[in-house]
Length: 117
Image 1: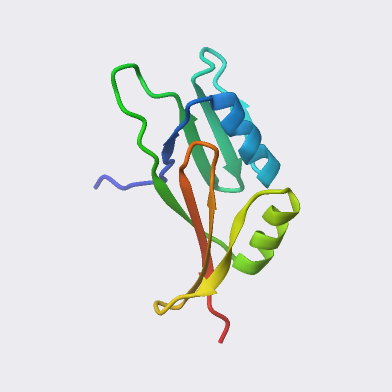
Image 2 (image 1 turned 90 degrees about the vertical axis):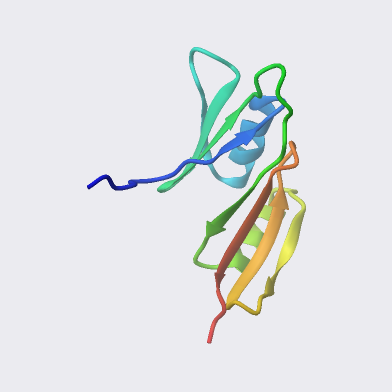
């Protein structure tokens, strides 16, 4: 039986080095793909995000990803301390406390943790 082992979303980036610098400032470990400056990786523990240039002829369309975190308020505070513009976490009707940050290319990173009971 074929099983999915993990996923790594690829976020479109106009400038991969700028995008990786943004993710590094948030606390991700980053590296650029050695053979091309049009692709890179941002990791944090088991979380992996790829950033890549968009091939010519295609439209760069921002995407949204979701990060499940232990404490959305603590993460928002940490990211704000870097100077990033973070939309403060709010309680949702589906039981998550969620915040939002947008990267330099307009990709939306939503992050949330379970509402404390």
